[in-house]
Image (spheres, one colour):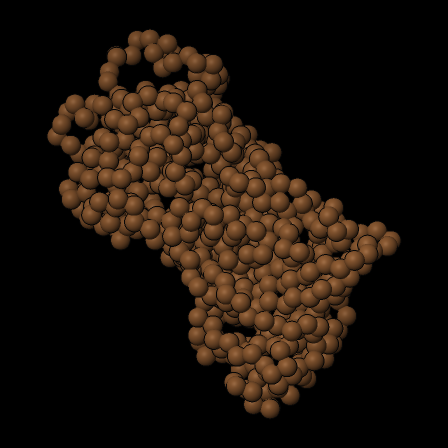
Length: 613
């Protein structure tokens, strides 16, 4: 796949570097099947998940009977009729394992919720009634802000704010109803937040308020007992079981509830997590939430000096490697399934709190993200169909998109941010950020490879993806490469064409070759022409210089390195784009675009990204 080089480096490179780049385009040796060679610093999981990992914890016959009775609605008073009747109370104080953001907590003390860079006055928030943007709903009704408030100052300075907001919320929601406040996921996070941050919301000297709050804890746990099976998705169900188990640990007379919660949690995790440890929504944000839930639950066990079921540690040990697999060289998250570039500090704190010591998963077929690490370069590739509708949360049509970074610098990215609606990214824009065009891949006639629907759901489109990963032998150190080839059928129904993408990354990390092909799905291609667009969204703060022949662009990265992008067939243009940063805020960037009118019988586009200096 030879790609001619033109005079595109005249602004940043000398003739010597151009000649060196041309020599580097010599064909690589032929491919051979992956013989098990591993990327430096990468290990594969030692085993697959077994059925035993999702079996209820082993308990005595009496405890099994108690768990079964509780499942069918037999309450603690019936199970223990001789126990003294008492008001709801907490049995322990939990040390929060995941501190929040102090700056967000300071904004709360000043009277504002902060969501993805947008300040929302607390006084203007409706704590009941119509739906808000989903992230704002989860913030307000899930009480996740308690961790931020706790992190910003001493408890005596924050407790008044927490109590005032809790009081307003309880007044606005006196009983369960059909509003978003009573979605299972929001209820679960709310109860877990109340239990973990109880000292913050129960510091009042007003005994009446304290009793009201504790009765709310107890009644909310009882509501979850009865309604956890009605969760809107699997992750919300897992959150519900985590909250039920935590309530069983921390609320008085909770032994039966704990047994009931543990059994339900282990079963629900089996439905949430795939064989390689990735959540079935394929969302890194959901992966993070699942790990956070289990980390917080383990802190509840520690608070009462009880041992967590071993299945929880086992599942944590397989949840962490897929998350590490979608991090860039800067340690922050890549932009898949609507995720913003969540910061390295937050992810490092989460991994430390999990207690899992592992390395990234290289080849996760079910999780669906291929990772290639070559010296300082990292290539991430979406090589699976989008999540099915029942699992999707802010699902995106990103099949065969890729991201590429070198050291701490992101070069090719996806826009991300589809899950950040309601902050500085408005709802309508978030819908567009879930489209195929918001990802670094190919589109036909501006149609999505998978239909993007409202409410985070996905329609018909990609149902099959074939993936082949091979190593290419070289003549010396750094001259070999890793070759990824994948194809999807998302355009077959409308156009009768399969999209195939080949990516080849040299072992020294300085050259990425690509080839995108549209191949007829039948023996004959259809007549007529189609508009094909290849998009390569760029990371922030990259300076560009376009070549005279229009076939290439030179990229000057913030670290001073120079890269050149070359198209082998059609001119390259530069257009505006955006990228969601670690706080979910939109950052103005640009994108390289290759546009062509081609026959519906198929066509091939080749391109090259190479480090010049």
